[in-house]
Length: 445
Image (tube, rainbow, N blue to C red):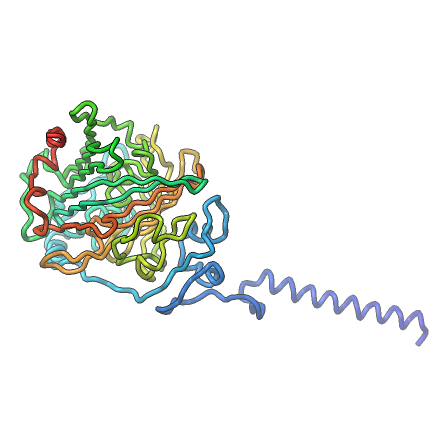
C-alpha cells in the first residue's frame, strides 16, 4: 500500500473511533437509563434508620426532600445549609389517631358535603367532628385535603407557659422574646372532657391567646385570634396594648403584617396555616415520601444552643427525622380575594396520616419564592388518649430568602412546663379571660 493511502486509512480509523466515543458519551448524558459513572452517588430508594445525612452525602437523599430544602443544600440562596448540619434518620412511627376522633369520622363523614359558593369558593355542611373527608377524591380533592388539615385533631386545651421566638438577620445578630400561649378548641371537640360550645352563628371553632413576657418593654402585649365554626365567617384578631391599657381590633388589612420583628404573619399562625378555607383554590399536586422531623423533643437549651448556625437548622438534639408520606398542596387566594394579599401561593407538604404541615414554601405577590418554613411537631401525651403529633406545640423555622432574615419559634422552651386538657391549672380554664376580646382588658388588673 502506498504511504499516502496508508495515511488516509489511519485517519479514517481515527475519525471513526472519535465518532464512536462521542456517540457513547452523548448516550450516557442524554439517556436517563444509561449506567452511571463509577464515581456517581446513585439516589437512595429508601433511607434506613441510622442513616446520617450531611452536606457530603445529601445528594443521595434529595428525592426525599422538598425542592427548597434541596436548594438550601445546594447553596442557591443567601441562607445555606451549614457544614455542621446533620439529619439523623430514625424509623417511621405512626401514632394512632384518637379513638373518639376516629369514631366521629365514622359517624359523620358520610354526611359532610362540599358547597360551591357564588364567587367560586367552597365551603362544607354537616360537619360535626372527626376527619371531614377521610378519602378525598376529585372533584375538589385538593380543597378536601386542606379541609382535613384544618379540622385535624387538636386537644381542647393547650397551655404553653414559656414559648420563645427568636429573630436573626444576615449578620448573625439575633434577639429573642418570651411569651405564654393558651390555645383552645371549642367546637367539634372529640375529647370526652371538653366543655361544649353553645351552637349558633357565634359559635367559635378555636381561639389562640398570646402574651409577651420578655423583653420587659414589651411585657403584657397580647394577641387574641378567634376562628368561628361557620367557615365563611372571617377570623377576628385583637391586640392588647399596655400603653393604652385596653384592647383594640386589628384590621383585616393587617393580616399580612409580620408580628413583632418575626417573619410569621397572622396567615401563618395556627401551626403554619390560618387562612379562610372558603377564600382559597387548592390544587392537589400528589403524594410523595419526604424527610420530616417529627416527634420532636422540647427545646432545652437557649437559642442558638441546639441549632446549626448560621442557618439555624435543627440539630440531632431535637430528635430523628422520619420518612413520611405527605400530600402536597398548592394554595392560592381566589381572584376576587387576592387583591392586597401577602402571598401569591403557598405550597404545603402535609403529613398524610395526621394532617399537619411539615414544610411550606411561600411566594410573594410577583410569584417569586419569599419564605421557607420548616415545622417540627412535638410528640405530646394527651391524658386518656396517648401520644399525638397535633397538640399545637412545635418548633418552627422561617427563612426569608429575599431579605436574608429568619425567625425561630419553640413551644415550649428551655424545659418550662406545658399543660394539655385537664392537666392545666384552674386559672387557664377561665373561658372569658382567654377566649374573648374583653378578657384582654384583664391582663394588667
